[in-house]
Image (tube, rainbow, N blue to C red; front, side, top):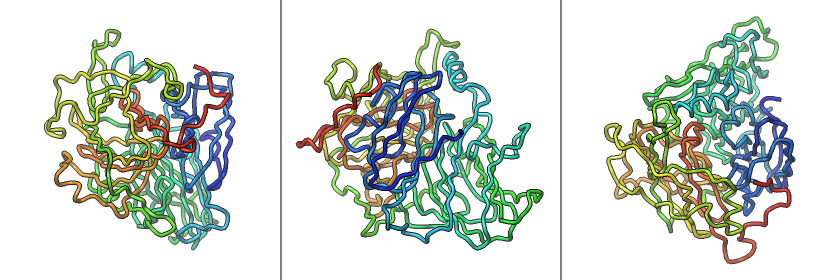
Length: 506
């Protein structure tokens, strides 16, 4: 089935997922947004917390859902295989606990995706041989279907039936590989009530913006004239880059309306509507009630400043003798041959170092005129070591190395608070005074604005090795990633659990 099956669970459940790999590629599965306390063995990114499950083999992911409820998702976490290997995770509140918003009549999952007509791994290999980006996707999809605006021999369209006067909860997931997406429903407002499985202060918008890796729950009232209405998803891109600008559509259909009625078209923000993007993200705030508090770290033990950059390195096998690359603090991450968590747990030497710099080697005007010379990066499997239970503030700064661009960054094993964002260069003297330390949005994936910065805070209370990377698959493959080694605490219940017996071999 495509998308894959939805995993339903409740807060507090233990979850066993038996994964058998029948694909031609070795593969691992990441449970995006599940915190996996002390249990990185179940996190899933290949060569970070495990080696991939080889074709024909099986691995059981053993997980406990603690203190989380809402919409998350799962996907392949090796190469670009998540293009087609993904599905929703719906964590219901504990039995007897309702939502902190009006109970919807019904709910539906909407997974936004990207589709290639060819084997995506072959497409990527061709791009890598040239040292250039691979061919862009051929379509966007909603629940695996592109909708009637595409020239398919059959009109593959997802439809959702609603009844007049009822309220519906939509669990929206952006599973696209490389595109931030706008989403809207013709004639209907969307009330945002949750992001990345964390309740928000509700607000109403005509459209939402959702980056790869993010989830958003919205309430929709079926309060319009009964008809058929398009639900639509299309990219947001405010940098001078080419993109698959095709619109995926699905249909919101009122009960009793025949399929012969033409759907009403959706109005989406313009492709490059930066003002909408900034305004929308500024409205996202944690619920911050006694039951669902926003425990923002007020004191910071460790301050990190990471620059996000594109680059060009020499490549003897590439067409032009060079290849595009990406880096954090000018370091392009090199994937190891065994899992970093195994190397950490068993003290295996020579796999990684813990000397990732806390700030860039050379400060410069990060978002000034485009820089097109001296774009080489350093290569290494370099990680940052973090003391257990310390509080971390990380500023992610976009740069104009080749071009500025928006980057959605995902941190495994944690949620974090987005205490501030801005356009231009982060000013360490002035900008912290404007941080929201009361009810900032809490999430696992943050969109760093084009030519701007985002500041996040979290408490490092989950020991292990935790991947942090751009969720644009193009950039991840180019090396825009690193990992944190969070040390064990003093007691055994603050230490990484032993690996399971069926952990895939390397």
